[in-house]
Length: 459
Length: 48
Image (cartoon, rainbow over all chains, first blue to last red; front, side, top):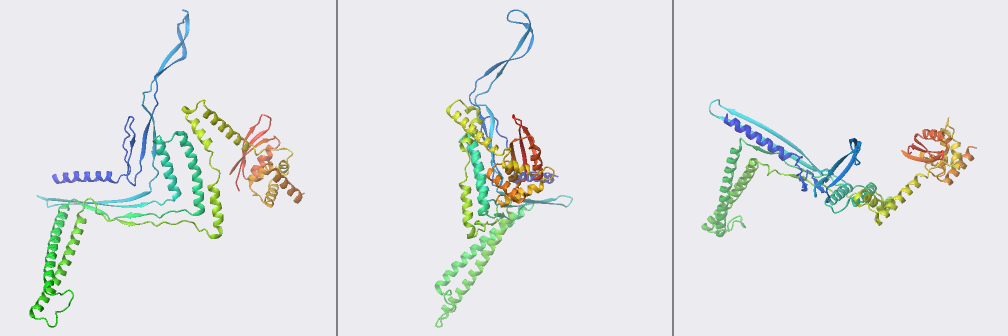
């Protein structure tokens, strides 16, 4: 009974230990109060950083509100309805945490697969003895997730931006501007990557044999290791002695360079040579025995390793695809032009982004020169947008209007086909949107040309 | 799909644009009156 209890407790301890070892989620409470906190991690886990944002110095304020009337005596002594006043006070402690800033790392670049198995065995003779064995093995394989350099760059860039904001290195205003820059960069990255071919290294895979530990057989493993260790020491000693004997024999007769004694050798020289050969053979045997003993000791140590720290790992290194796509020399020039166009394309409106961020931070919106300038930037931007939306306008008596008149309500398709035909003949895309644009006279010359084409071909 | 905003559409031209949008595979999604009696309409049509 005592053994069973010990076994059960041991099993429980082992299983609970595994839960901590292989879990990928650790929910560690953020410390209350004002202390920054970080949740940490290894390669297959990510961290989420929390930093409390402290309030600026504030004073206790009070406010008087009138919310209804009650029966009472007014200030001039007359009875009747008088306003009921409520005094509310709000307090904010200096340095009190109002909210949190947080940065969560992007999804991991590696994943791992875990396999665990357990086995148990118990035996008893029904009287005095009880035996139990418990075996546990686990194996883990890890691999990287191949991502293109553009994706990696964006992940890193955005996370570092968050870190800078978290640490107060940049303001909310700059954060907004940076987000717009990231968006612009994203388009450029993806466009160029599609043109030139993505550089994406294949995954690296790391796998190892299952590490196992057997609690019940632990004593046997230890004994086995001790035996092999003794054998290895004995073998090493024997090899050392054989080496000494061989060195001594070599001084009397050199059997290393010669395979037989000299022809004029006397009996003593022949005997010395024979002794040298014997010593050489003995040394070879001892060497072989020593190597075998060392191998057995290594195997015993691996079998007896309880924690799996001796697991061998096999690594398949990834190879880098140089990218570059399948661009032949004939299209290289066009490719280069396209990339150049993307890189030199109009950038984001930094001033507009800055002003949006500036005004979104109410604390910084003041009646100063910068605020006035930002207001002007926003007004100009809104005006430009408004102008852009007014491009499409119905103009009576225009060429576009005349084209629209040629499209009957009950059977519009043939007329629309003619407009598309004219557009195609004039080198324009015969898309539905262009048909609308022609009827709104957005490009008067084009509308006039389309009208002339239709009138000439379908009078 | 493309969204197109057309201003200053007269009352007479409204049904024409509605049918035109339909015939082009799209539709007129919104009509807003302008102070001068004309209309601003929103049309969505396929890109191709």
